[in-house]
Picture: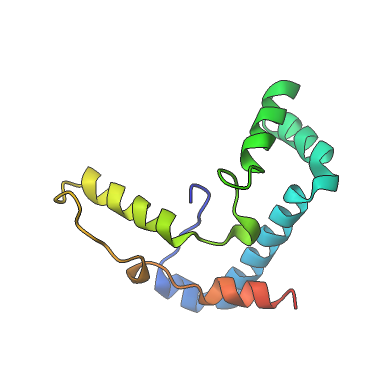
Length: 120
């Protein structure tokens, strides 16, 4: 969930087309990065753009491409992960431990679903 983007609902509604296109471009880029044939190029990009040593770039790539700990395919939100983020935010803001906050209150996948549909 660390690379998630967030916008206000009113902004999303007013910019629906641009938001869906942005998400489609992000997903396309993520697909490219996670394609095994692009591994060496992706590591080189990390090295160049983030000014990392070759080993650090390779280590970063290994983490972000890890099927369990890395990026989720197509940048899909993992709801259990989002629930944990909300739980932690509540704790940091002084809410009682264990107070449940529903992800549904914060997540609208309409624009994400439009982006995914654009690949069909």
